[in-house]
Image (cartoon, rainbow, N blue to C red):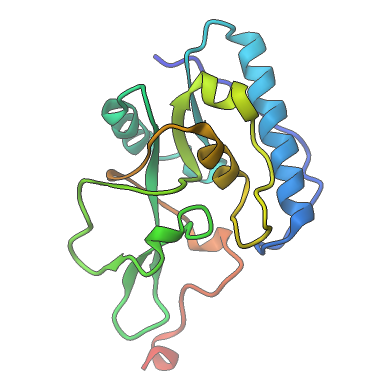
Length: 188
């Protein structure tokens, strides 16, 4: 029920998941190209939903994000990963570079609810078209302290930025570069 555009391009990577300027410049170029191409196909678009491929297999959560969107702000879904490196597994917030206010957020049984005002969101983001038209994605300065391409878009937007816990997306541990699980003996 939502016009869909999937931008595929052979990666210039592989880029390790680190705070590398070349990696972020590449993602800036990719995201701006993808948005430009989508708007060419759907010229009457008023709002943009950008979802990284890791999360496309979770349409129920993406629909929750859309349902909660007010049309006047930037709204991002919370992203989580199961951390099985300790005796008791814990879900921890995943994209802390894009959302530094979420650093340290974790839960074992009951996930956070509601929403929180933040400086930036990433990975699964919904925003008015004019936000991208004003500045597009870019590399925030000073880099890397200022974040990634999502931080640039959010900070330049001039609109409120919200992180919602009502739409929770889960990252597959096999798609990350850091250890997220250890054998039971090593956890103990």
